[in-house]
Amino acid sequence: MSSTRAAVKSFPEKLFIRRLRRSELPPDTVKMARFLIGKAVVHDLPAGRLSGRIVETEAYPPGDPAGHHFRGPTPRIRSMYLAPGHAYIFFNYGAHFMFNVVSEPAGIAAAILIRALEPLQGVELMQRHRKTTRILSLTRGPGCLAAAFQIDRRHDGLDLCAPGSLWLGEISHPIGPIGKTVRIGITRAAEELLRFYERGNPFVSGPRRLLLPRQRC
Image (cartoon, rainbow, N blue to C red; front, side, top):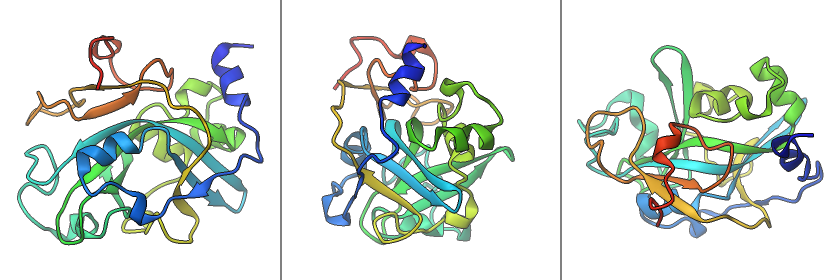
């Protein structure tokens, strides 16, 4: 058995996950992006529960030239102006849904892109959704994780801290050292160190060259 498959199977199907309260979320986009590393995304479907540890995030704070909110409000980004802990979902390049967590007080647009998860529960369901048995391919990258977790525009504006099928949680599991790098796939404000990740986790996406030991916080 590979080390990756063994790591996935080390989490029991009956794993206890506590729902996060809005009051626990840091009132700052960059701080929240780091805070979310090691937290859980849960999607309770009729076929079973899907859950995964967040191992990679990108912050898009207020006024960020790389953010969808930089030019002001539009109907498409209405959910970015909700209270922290709501979902902002967009369709990227006509191919993938992207799952974001709103991160500033209501009325101030900002969000955190969830870039990668480490699968915890419902791996077989994820494999069916992604049409692959390769564990590392399931939730490594924002488009992959949204497909594996069946997250789409129906979930835009959903309160992830309220009772519901899609929510944020916390598990009792050690978090490894957290690194930070530049964000991936952007041209504006590309030099900002606003991408956070759990160092050494095989589910972290992106070029390996960015994951250097010196890039840590």
